[in-house]
Length: 117
Image (cartoon, rainbow, N blue to C red):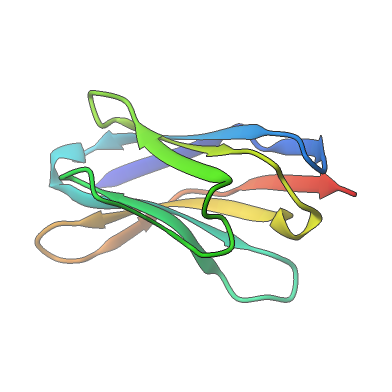
């Protein structure tokens, strides 16, 4: 079992920055990949950024150059630094962890990010 708790969302003006955190607990050694997803009202959930156990990182084209995913040395907490925010970044952001052997996905409860234009 893995538990994920997100924090750091809020209201920010366009062009501003926010940092999201995702704290993992439980069977963290079984985690292979952690990721950030987001879901805007009326839209499907979309992948924003991923980081795997080896440190490989990928980003959605829409956030490249603006968002940075990174983790602490203990690999317990994953962060999403969001700069140059746009109104279209407004969404509920979810943290996700994929288990190495089973591929099972765990999700956090989500944190709201609202960017005012």
